Image (tube, rainbow, N blue to C red; front, side):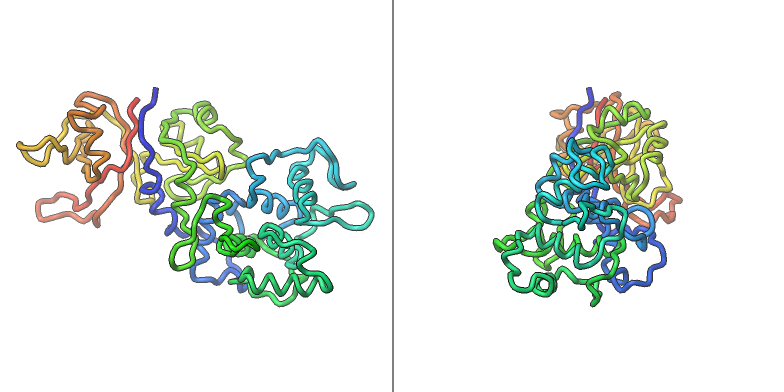
Length: 372
């Protein structure tokens, strides 16, 4: 049995500031100073995959799935549909269920002849209709001039922030959709409430989406996986549908499986279909790392207190216990004792440069643990 406690807000503190490497882009939408943060928020939300080139065009089928994943219907989304709504979308197609839901809700419409044209690029005016539908606007709100009134509301709701296209027929890229759905999360619904609440997120005092709050609401873990089979047994959803972070970087499932061949600590959110994994990679560019070993010693603040200050593993390293929660775990009242096997998730502080005594100036602070 694996025991532990959830401390994802600490584990994700680096995620919001880690910049992912994007392809060279020319569109105005991708030059935003906070695009890296926006991209991470959308990845955490599970609305769309953010791996690969941001300049790739988004198809109508892909956008239909984004709309559903950004809605309250995300929890009931399946890959296939029992009903074929359009002549060119079979019930077993990958995006069939998303297309059916998007059409039923009026977020997207088909073409004459009963076709949806799923492989065609989604255009700005189509995307604007979709996100305005999520905000609660219907055709009745734009009576008399559907097209122009809808595009005006799109601008008035600040859904065009960092997108900036003037031509409604512009074909959208993945980067455009990152900005569009980030703007959606910040926007107010027709009812007056901020849309972020639909995904259990919130907007801070600066009007930006709080990524850590979004992720921490529905997260489970930590759990240790030591094989591909254990990864699949731990995570209750398909990794093909998930957004995966390994040591703070977004990766494909193969990287997670490879890490688990040694061992990896896993957190996951079923609601957002997001996985956060950490391993003992000391060259990790994330500020959270993992250590596994036997507790050799527990140090205390002084001889007159029962509050532990640090723990030493048989790897020779000493890990600081700076939080009340972690101090309790390793105290006389806690569950971890000298001689126990434990996995520590820790944060690295300091420059790593050597002191006059030849010791590294880095310190390791425990933020979470798993006890086999």
